[in-house]
Length: 78
Image (cartoon, rainbow, N blue to C red; front, side, top):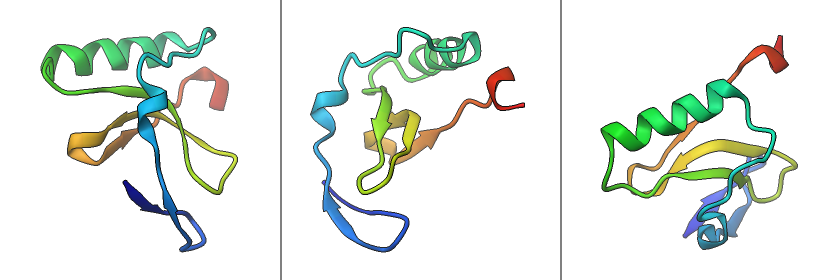
């Protein structure tokens, strides 16, 4: 998959390495969000902690078929 980073550069994004990738120290909000998404979208692949190419940033949750990312801001961001 081709993606564009925050500076406009294009990268080839290999998301297959993010299958079954959950942070050990994921917040309860993150866990609840993933569980909720798996309930409402049982047939869709839901990836966690996906690196944004060219950046030192990660998407908390990414649904490739919907091209949708979810960022969970819990108490750790306050």
